[in-house]
Image 1: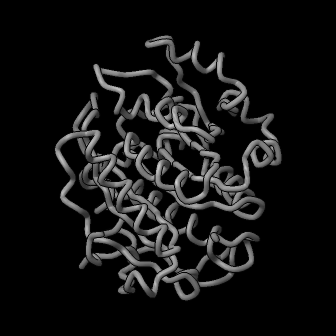
Image 2 (image 1 turned 135 degrees about the vertical axis):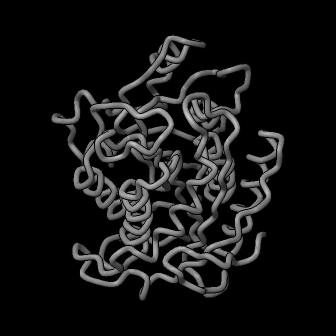
Image 3 (image 1 turned 180 degrees about the vertical axis):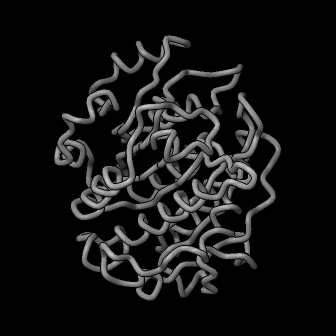
Length: 299
């Protein structure tokens, strides 16, 4: 496992042994196909911005970092081969689970989710993946590879004992039978389309999940007015408080066992979206591990 980083989330200097949460920066960037590449810079930008957040959470009425100890690992040298890089991340998350800590991965492109999902499945035996995303990510392959941000959920569903709940989807393709796959796998996939968000009932999202939930959060789920700093933005996305309400209820009624926040592609000189991403990470930690919200323990 990598050592503790010199630059850390919130500038917290906790050891892994002292921590409740272990943050894993993993700037994987192999299959970004449009615009200036930048997801490799996402983890460090979140970490660099984070000490400038207001640490008091007015909703939880506490300084979360005082109750939840956070350790940040040094970003590893990511292996060149894409499949091997995903396995590299899986091994890191395996080690975090062996220590009974909560893994929170900062990406990096969305294809990385397969690694921690495999680790979570080994730890818990059966998991639900809660995917916040603008895109379904269910293509069988894209640009000649199955290890791709556009096919990551298809690969996760090849694992046994996994079901998928998608929130905020507003883009799905007929390429490589993505739409057909979605239609044929309704027993394992529940999708809450962005076009229907005015009719969403949060309890339906929660009830679609099993007990152990792995959270994967592609920040392009946010409306592009809130989050322009991503590789494939889509209009018509979620707003902040709407998203927080869903996360809060999931943390309250289910057991979130790990998480990743992916696809931040920082824009030089434009820091507001980076603050949004860092605040999101802090809220995930607060909801899931700050006392008074989550009713379940990791175990």
